Amino acid sequence: MAATAPGTLAAAAAVHTAQLGRARAGGGAVVIVATVQSLAILALLHGVGATAGQGSRAAVVSGAVLSAVAFVAWNLLAQRLAAVKAGGGMDYFGTLPVRPAAVVLGFCSCYATFAVPGIVLTAAAGTALFSLPIAHLWVLVPAALTSCVALSGLGALSGLGPARPEVATLAGQFGLTAVIFLGLIPPSSLPDGVAAVRAAIPLAYDIDAFASALTSHPDWTGIALRLAGSAAFGACCLALAARAYRRTLDS
Image (cartoon, rainbow, N blue to C red; front, side):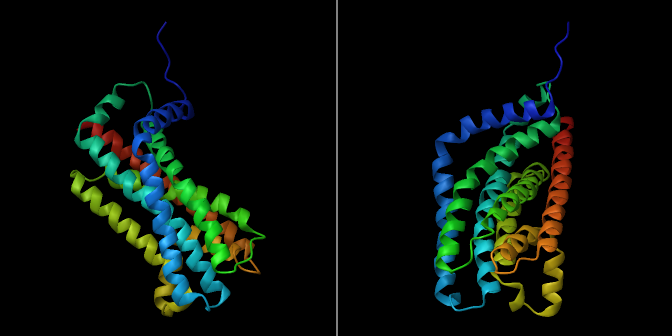
């Protein structure tokens, strides 16, 4: 009797475990760098924005928190997948009875895991440093989850889409820069036209959702809509990354 292919989630979990084992040796360094980078951003901006309004302070903290996700789940994942692709490692996964979506999900979830310590520590330090209310800090959980989905989807697409690994590295770096720019400049400080464009960019959805939760009067409707929009955007990115993976196997 022929063996059947495992389910998508089971296969993704297997890929996640395998990649986590391979990355574990350098995982500690990744966690430290991502966390220190975000904490350094907080310390720097505290010196120039500690007396700003609550909304601006919340935006800075939210941007610093989610920049930890961008560093790992977009920038480093793009570089990792590009290196695996260039080295022919994707051919190995192509011989396994697993769906392309499972391979992509496994890689994405592995690197998203490395962002968790940075997310938690930066959120704790940021709310304390900028004197923000913590009654609704639980919003960090869904915001981090949807952010990991969206940014790791972009990381996978950046790593698997370009033909050359150098392009994937540039895409990851530019992506990290874009998230830092969108997150660390409060929308209230931008010209009206630029702020309107920023509000429509999916990369800002999670940042704005979590920032709203860190204020005294959160916009719950806006938070829910932004998180749902981010999740939908991330699902599209993951689907496109799976298609890019299929093209890699067919080439």
